[in-house]
Image 1 (tube, rainbow, N blue to C red):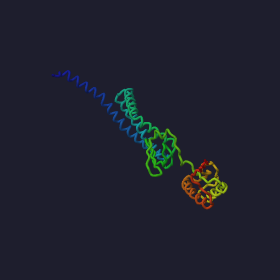
Image 2 (image 1 turned 90 degrees about the horizontal axis):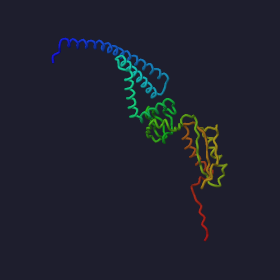
Image 3 (image 1 turned 90 degrees about the vertical axis):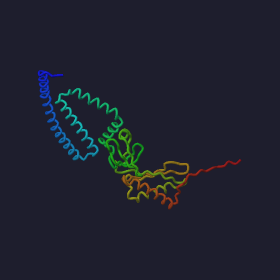
Image 4 (image 1 turned 45 degrees about the vertical axis):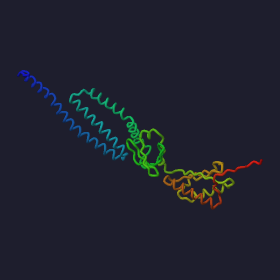
Length: 275
């Protein structure tokens, strides 16, 4: 098929007109991109320095920086699309549809993500705190955006999704400077309760780790099947809780043996009826 000179001239003219229309837009878009990218980097860097000065949680800092960076680059892309003449409503509709599809596909991860944000913002616990959560007791080693890592006292690593962690009860055993030591000791029926109480209180009085205010107390709590149960309450600084607990149990056993106070074992008395 031969092209007439008039048609060729018309096509060339249309190509030139199109180039005159598109090339300036491409040039403006390229300039806008490079200047915008430079501004985004400066803003992100300034925000990073600001967060470092506030000494916030590193995980939270990384999350906030990532969100701000993503928002700034989305704004930059929208600006470039506007310069190129892409209808803004169509562009936003595409982004919305993509966001909805991603949200449906990752709804479980998004729940954990939201939980991680809440934990990092409201700080119900922090790294190195001892907590009870999701049926586990241990020391918090890392708080991430999706998961929180704990180490149990027998050195097992527990990885808990933040979604469930943020929506369940958490017992933080590290926020208060002092803790109460709770012990229960059984003595034989017929034991002089006053003597047993004085023996126990004397142990706590001579232990420098035990606080005397509030003062330790010993109460008769229960008439058991084989023993009179004494409940013991004493306060100590949080790091000393378990050392005081175990040392006190051993000291009570030694002191009771010296005082002749019997710690009974389970026993049952059987009366046989005569025929």
